[in-house]
Image (cartoon, rainbow, N blue to C red; front, side, top):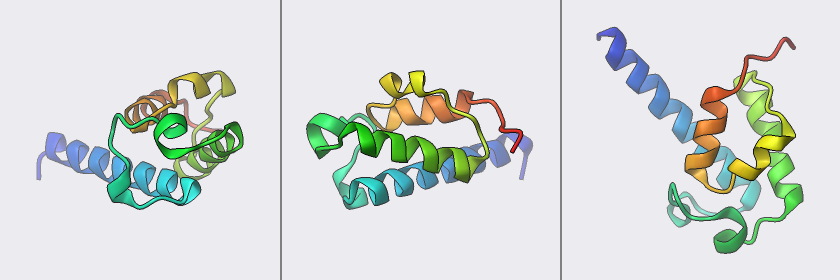
Length: 91
């Protein structure tokens, strides 16, 4: 497998893990969420759930996500972008 193929596989695995985390915290089936469905409007998420998602992502991916990024984390596409751009945690 080439480096590009490995990067694609890693990105796909990361996206799947993000989806799993979001679905678990929002207590929804994976089939109910799309990359653009809105957590609050379409899935009834509140601000506490958003903080839970942020904390779970930090733990899972060993990154640091500033709470100001919550405004971008309104759907899976937003979460993918935030996680991809988050700095690695020193923890």
